[in-house]
Every structure is written in C-alpha cells, then in structure tokens.
Length: 585
Figure 1 (tube, one colour):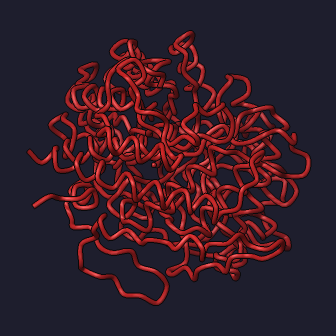
Figure 2 (cartoon, one colour; figure 1 turned 180 degrees about the vertical axis):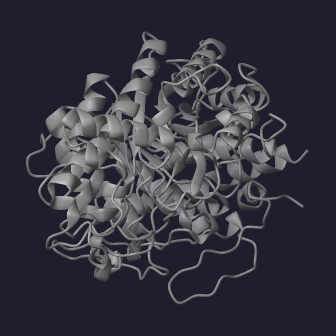
C-alpha cells in the first residue's frame, strides 16, 4: 500500500501522525491522509473588509518559552511531466527545471521571483543525526526535504552537536552524519543554517531527546564540579560549561573557548566546499539551548516552571573569583563575597522577593546595580570572545554569523524584569538591556536572532505581566539603533493562521523609529515534525511561506494566498505521494 507524506514523515518521530487538534477537539488516533486535503470552494473565500479581524484561537495550556543555496547543479527528484504542466497551469510553480537549475519551488506565473521579503528556514529534528553518526530515518528525511523545497522554503537549520561530533576524545571529530545530511540539503537546493551546538540537548522546553556534552568534557566536570554553572543552593547545571572558566585550560589542557574555536575550524575545513553555497549561516551557540544567556530557568527535574523568575547562576568558584576581583576594583570588597541572597527561588514571582520587588527592591540599589552590571558584562564578554573566534575562522567563507538571544517575556511588565535579570539581560524599566547585546554583535557583523516572534501579549497569563509583543518591539528598536540585522524564530510550535499573521507582522519590523524599508533578514520555523505535514497545517504553512517571501511591499489578503496554497497542495499531492512511495522501496 502506498504511504503518503504524512505517514512517511511520521517516522521521523517514530510515531504515527495524528489528525490536527483544534480548540475544543480531542486528538484523533486516525492517521492523516494527504489524499484527504480539504477542497476549499473558491467562491466561498473572501478577503476581510478593512478593519475586520480574524478571531484568535484559544490557546491551552498557557504558552511557555522554548529552551534550541546556491544552485549547485545537483538534481533534485523531478516532477512528472503531467504534474509540472498542471502546476504551471495553476500558476503556482516555475517551469520544470533542468539539470542546470534543479530545485522545484513555488513561483507565481512561472517566473523567477525577485529578491525581497523574508526567507523562511525550517528547523530539523534535534535527533537528525544519530549516535552512530548517520542520518536518522533517512528516507523520511529525504522526502521531507523535497516537500519543504517544493513549498518555497529557503532552507533548513541543523544542530551540529558538540556532544556527537567530538564525543569520544579531544580533537577526534566524526562528521559522518552531518556530511550526509548536508549533501541531502544540497541535492534538494536547500540552504543551511548550521548551529554550532556547544550545549546539552535535554532539559529545556521542546527537547525531545538527550545529547549530553562530550564524554571527556563531562569527565572534567565530574573532577571539577565548578566547571558547571551553580546557583546559591549549590545546584549544578551541566547544560553548558560555565563561562567563568572561558579562558582557563580546564578541558584537557585547552580552554573552553579554544575547544569551541577548534570545533568551528574543523567544521570549516571539512565543509569548505559547501560554505557560501549550501551553508550560508553559522549560528554560534553561547549557552543553554544555544542562546546567549545563563541557565537561569532549567526545566530538568522540575526545577523551574513557567512563569517563575529563575535564579542567578554565579556561584561556581570561577564566577565568584571574578565577582571578588570586580568588587575590589570598584572599592567595595564587601560586595565580592556572594551574589544576592534575597532574590527568592526559581518559581517565585518578583513581589515575593526583597531583591526584585518594585518598591525598594535590591535590584535598584547601589549593590544591585553593581552586581547586575558585572553579571551581564560577564555574559557580553563571553559572547565577545566566542564571536571573535568565529568571525576570524569563517572570514571570507561567504557565510553570515548569528547569535540567538532568548525571548524572556514573562514579568516583562514589572519594573525589575526579574527573569531577564537572572538570565543575564540587564533590562529594567529604566535600562535597555538589549542595546548592549546588539552593539556587541554589530562589532562583529553578526545577526541578532530572537525568539517568541509568534506570540501575542493577550495569549499569555496576564497576572504574570507577559508582553512578548512589546519585548520584540524593544529588540527591533535596539537592533535598528545598532544597525544589526534581526532574524526571528517562533518559541513554540504553532500551525494556526493567527500565529502566522503575528509572525508576518513582527517580521515586517513596522515599529516607530525603525527604517521603513527594514524587514527581518530571515525567519526560522520551529520545527519539522509530523504535525507540520498534516494536510490542513501544510496548506496553512505553504501560504505562510508565500506571504513571508512576498514581503511587506506586497499587500495581498490572506484568503487570496490561501486559495493559491490550496491549489498548490492539491496539484502537487501525487508528486509528494510518489516521492514517499519511491523512498519505501
């Protein structure tokens, strides 16, 4: 029996895909069937009248934060001639491409699209490469890449795990699975954002598998537990090596920053033939979940739950040594013995704590200002060190360098912004904590990648004063002031049009004070999984990609694009099914 794409992609997660669940519905155990794509009567589709809005879906449970080509001449699998003709008749695909131009993508009127708009990338599954250094579920991966390319997706994002590649011994790199996966992306004409993932996978929102740090790194951390981030209760966090030891030769004679640099250099040398062509961006991991931050809100073992304020991570001996030196240099040696001891626990709220409360809180005292300046500066210097290495290593390689910053939107409406402070972002009602980060990235020509782009303020728990929209606007203004490109990601999986509309609006960067012609330089969609290929979700996603590529200069209503997407999904259905069936043999 022929298996459709949803069945095929379902194997990526090792589970059968279930039908989409909307508000008020219970999940169905019936497998999705691409042949059951909803046929939308075109006469019933209309554009909204001016001022008319789409009713938002109810979102349950409350949203929580997320923890992480050029044409090459290589042929993609080709469309059947009759399908190609049908697609061109609908005006949704370019003419069938030749061996010289072999990627199938969604174009209007059979013409090549002009550059503009916001290119969409899709994150690959976290376990795309196995512990055996092979591509995980290769047939499903190949079929899904073909489907993504057909929908007009620009490329994919791949986590290149330190804990897989250099797992066994220092300097012993095994790129096997990544070499195969990158060649697959090249074959399909997809560009790649490669993430240098120097953190552990597991323990954060959305982590579906566990990939620890390299074995030899963990051995050193076992010998010296102060290499792990530590809170005031001496709880150790092994997601990422503490930045307090960045410049110390604590990892078999090398410093952590040297280890990161050697890894990136080995990646460059191994994949130099793909850099600037297939691989177009290197995102440099700088902390837990690949983000430039401290592990202040770890979900592992239930330590933290949304929307708790988190906890400062500065109690390993290396961080405390730096704090002591800074206090002495400031002429206040009494400030150097410890961080705040009255900042509450992971799951407290700001007003529960003397340090974060709005009236007379320690965060706004001379000691609080000293401590928060030091804590945030340590994070900036960590980013500076790694970026200096990355830009030097990839200089002239034709790739962008990017850094991801977490979208910590809960308690944003308070004066202290406690969760941002514990994560290392010195952002309060009276101080912009994102401008210094943007300025640091500007010095290295790096892209500022930000999460929570899909969220709206009213979707979040209002008693926690969540404000993701306001936070995104602040970051947009900070990056505009620093003249740094801004890219975005969604923090949680979303398949509804309401989230897509919010991403479109946020990516247009229509913020007072921003240049009118400015848009995000890219958007990365989280994540490729079986649910994305459910027929209704896939139809919406195809329309979303088209709207993003059109850019804010093209004002077409959502229903018009959805109509084109419906036609596209319908005519390419046999192509997608044939690809999946062929891969089963």
